[in-house]
Image (cartoon, rainbow, N blue to C red; front, side, top):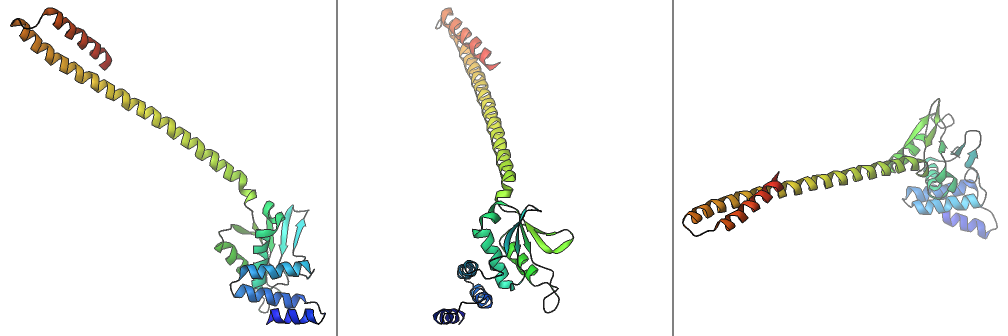
Length: 227
């Protein structure tokens, strides 16, 4: 109905108002069409309809980007924040402060926008906190502002991986040395048994002293490797 109303107004040469645009944004948002809602928010911005055209601005004194949601309904406010986080370059690279107000002007004097925005941010896994001394503001940090922490984590993981590789190489080298040591010991035992048999055979005239000397030298070499 709101879309038809906008088309009818434009056909009559009448520009849609901010109230009409908010009805469109709310309708699409409540129906789960988030992209459709953001499309109409963009339309309201390009038409210069407040508060949608003015809610984003840089606060030079605080060095932050502010999204002032005063004058918006809860569904439109959520769309406005999602739009800022998705398409607004300033919000993507700077600290974003969302001004929700404390509900002094709402029907029951209770905050309406803040719970809606907190619910949206929580569902998206975005960390935020209320400004100390001002419950009508939420502070959140964009992914780019978290880049130093991410870089630190990546470097730390890389160092841990490198240490693990070095430890694994050292462990494998020790295992290899142990296997060689055991192999030498087994060869020593085998050659000793062969030497015993050779001595018996020599006594019977079947093995020469030269053959026995070769066995003794082999035992000495294997024993040195086993040490």
